Amino acid sequence: LGVVLLGFTPGQLSFDIGFIFALLCTLGWGLEAVVVGYGFKNSSIKDQYALTIRQGISSLIYLIIMIPILFHNPISIHYNAFILIGCSALFGTLSYLCYYHSIKKIGAFLSMSLNITYSAFAIILTSILTMTLPDIKTVLCTMLILTGSILVYFKRMS
Image (cartoon, rainbow, N blue to C red; front, side):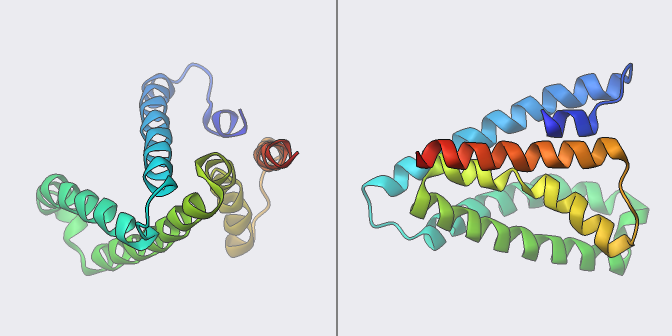
């Protein structure tokens, strides 16, 4: 609810379409965690190997789809764009390494509930790095996201 409220702007057509795509992403993300968790359950597969397979397939798909788009857009050919893409890929891979490790150690349910807090931490870090204060809606939604994750954790542990 906190994440939905953060992105909601009443009467905006792109929100309706974006919401549909967000639901598809959520379904895919949830299925990924469950499949990975199931794969880890009774096997000796290392989380690093599983992540390498996942990132390799993902990178191949990105290369097939994104490289033609990047080279047909003159703005994106700048050197700085490739540095930003490389940095994003590095942090994304490190993030997924931690995520897959947590799925193996504590399971898909808890890992997903903790992983969703990235949206709250993105707001906190943005506020610190840009030295700006978020509006009240953003603060309340951030608190809602963090509270929801904490409640899921304590419910699971009890």
